[in-house]
Amino acid sequence: MEDVLVVHYTMKEENTRKAVAVTDRKNPAKGIVLFLIFLCLHSLTSCEEKDDISLRTLSEEKNYATNNRAAAVCLSSIMYNRTDSTNPLERFKLVHISDAHLSDRSSSNHYETPKNLIEAVKFSNQQELQINAIVATGDHISYSSRTEALLYLQSFYKNLFSQNKIPTFPCLGNHDSNINNQDFSNAFSKKELYSAFDNKNNYALKQEDQENYYYADVKNPMGGTVRIIALDMLDQAYPEYNTVYNALFSQKQIDWLCRKALKENMTEQHQVIIITHFPFQALTAKMSNYLIDGSFIHSARLIPEIIEAFREKEPIRESYPNLQKKNDTIYVDTDFSDYKGDFICYMGGHAHVTAQFEINGLRNQSTSRLPQKMLLCTNMSPSEAGTMFNRVKREENTITDNSFCIYAIDTQERNIYITFFGAYLPADKTKTEYPEIQIIPY
Image: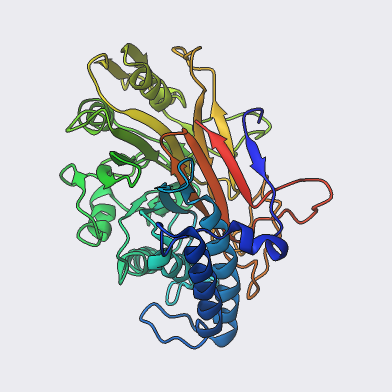
């Protein structure tokens, strides 16, 4: 993309230069030394530590220690805005996981001990990293019988929230419906999905009664508040549409988004992140974009056009017909002119690839601002290989086993700094440059 900046670092040569004063902000030099000591001690002891969030084998602990050390150093280089060298500002730091696909088939995310999910929680809870939030953008499970799939789902939430002190926000993906192609016999209802998630979160949510969409406010260390809005793309009372291949947002959810999630208690210091699963792109005949094998029942433009009106603080009056049946049009009629706050980006998954793209082609597209951005996170387990775009080499029981994204969001610069835990390099490095730190302006 034209507006994506990249920063290149060589891990072995520049660890010292990249470390920052995460332990002593008033004395940067002292902080660098202390942080490097922390990393060395952590790498030496992590294979033997017996904390509650534990892995299964010594080799897994060694792989985790290697990835943890590398990711922590990269994060240390982007976690502060150092415009003022005497008083650096801490950026909003977020861990993004997606497509865990817990099942009894993947050794990396076997539902009884989902190693890669445990690693993400363990990484995020290190006090020195000062992670502000975790998001999990859907496909928590893989399809199975109703009984088994429920065990997968319960395991996902248990391991995501148990002993996790970081504010953590999941949303549902297409596979979480537990529909297998055209077979609806094992599909979960909205209430069943709600029950699996309800009361297991570690943070107060503004959740509609018996609905799987919600919002939550998290303090931004740069000042103000980041509002996380979680959408539900499986929004039907009972299995009617095949939500393995179709994203469905009800009129009720759209009204809630416009009149509550983007309005209630919002201030000028609010910044919004929307999490969902499907990329906001229209299905193409040759599967040439990140949506790959899905479609939106009421148009891929529905949510982005609402957000564009919110960004521009202008009215929107549009209708979005149901593309599969008549008499189910969604109507949007909201005047955002007196709303407060701003928008950062969307976060999603589905394509099993780490990617960033611009959302264009909106009927109310702004010509004075950068296009909306959507960030995608790859799958957590190498057993769930990407169909089209995943060019990153993944091997179980190695340091390339796990993969997820780490962001440092600068709401003053309006930049998103991206780095990675685990695998991120394309298998053929001669054809594709993929820096370990990327900068996305929004």
